[in-house]
Length: 448
Ligand code: 5AD
Ligand code: SF4
Image (cartoon, rainbow, N blue to C red; front, side):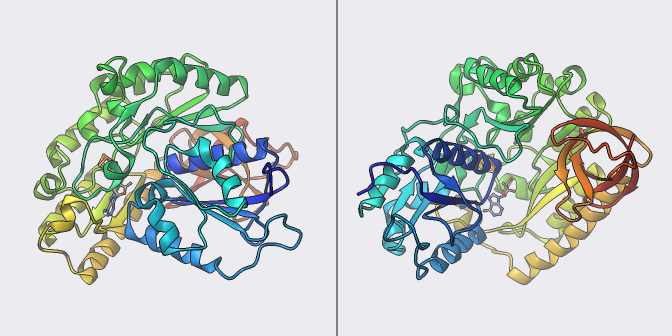
């Protein structure tokens, strides 16, 4: 019988949102600190961990495919285990719990969204042949005391809230992750300070709706104060995601023109441009209010890069409703749009709504939307032709290792050729780049 996890190999597959990416970094850091070794794929792993998402059905289906494909594969030769341990965490773990091990008997561990700390002991139980499930909702909400193995040493995710109170009618998140809870400002400040001391250059504050931060703490402090506190740590670049338009306050908008570190980029999900559909989605704003907000954001920060989420094919969406969504995309000129076809989630109000949009109609709208999104994104990137911008370098480009890749303050990806003098900027350093080419999803530039 194993008494510790030392020497075991593991891999983590992450689906879904940035919160899951953050959790995976903590899981990797925690297992490494216990003497486990991360390996590239499931074949060589004694432990395979899935951090899952259930926002759309496609993510649910993909997980089943991945887990089933491991069913008949023996564990690597030389493994101290008789059988590979498969562990499912994240939103599907939280939602389905025990039922997952019944549906897929080769899954030995299920851990919920606040059970990261329990994972090592759950894995040990599984190593001795027991099934282990922990989906307690009163576990540790913020696993930020666990060591993080960051994908990029200079970029940190920093959760400030978990859960959501908004109950958009299509969305499963509040049903799985529970009510919104805010992390104490002192904790956030301490972690941000530690990040700066470790050489982190960019912090992204995370929450389903960061703008309602603090409401469960008697309304004080507010999100703007979190921004001020993190900026004051001396962090180079500060970002946040996600914002609900109904809660984006004037004082937060003002921070885009006053805070040194706050990057000129804002993700503001609109979901639909039709007032009728927005009401059915329980979004609590209208197209006019959303556009007014965009104008105020642009007044405070004229060059800001805006991105959004859009769902097409929500029950009852007509061609006219869809045209209003296209209108918003045209008017705003987003740098990036995450486009989704509505996916029915059992347990949400919209799952019972009549007038489902046929799949072909939704697909057709999706295709037309993606086309307009691409045109507008290209126009936005073209505005930066010739500009000189500070780029935070990430390392060699995945597409072409002769190029280096980095991010502009607006969050655009830039590819840069190695300079003739051979002085390649180190990953994690910031250097000036002149933009020489603009494509829909990236820029090209030369190092100055
Ligand atoms: N179907 C399609 N898209 C959804 N999203 C959330 N729930 C659903 C659903 N049931 C999208 C929203 C949200 C993003 C994270 O996922 O656009 O902003
Ligand atoms: Fe889901 Fe709406 Fe909450 Fe976002 S704000 S997590 S879409 S319920």
